[in-house]
Image (tube, rainbow, N blue to C red; front, side, top):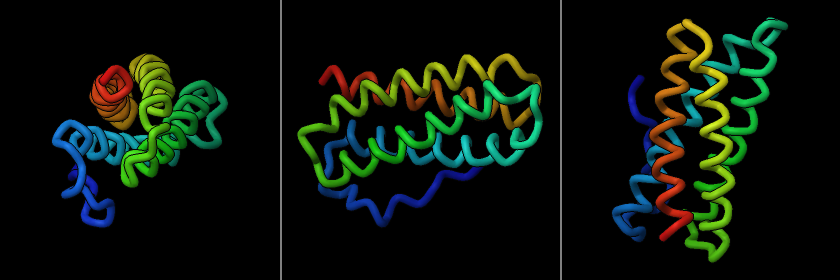
Amino acid sequence: MSPVSTDLYGLSTLSGAMQECVRNCLDCIAACRVCIAECVGDPAMEECLRACLDCQMTCDTSVALMSFQSPLHKKMCGVCAEACERCAEACAQHEADHCQACAAACRRCAQSCRQMAEA
């Protein structure tokens, strides 16, 4: 999966760690969208689907708050890290390539967001 373009997010004004976190969030959003598209309608994938939806929404909000350097970004990144960890756990239980790719993207994002939350 190719990285999502971040040109629209004003990354040049952000610290290096925040830029990396935004990129990881955007990659995670993209991976979750693929996973959601593959899981929708399959009752056996309901937990995975819900985890991906939570993850996508928290990543999206984290990106928005980091992009304009809101003082709330640290709190949101903490929530995002938790959502990403839950999503990684749910997706890792499935052998499908899209689930494994989503789990990997979620782990990277969780690590970046955890660092942002603790900074």
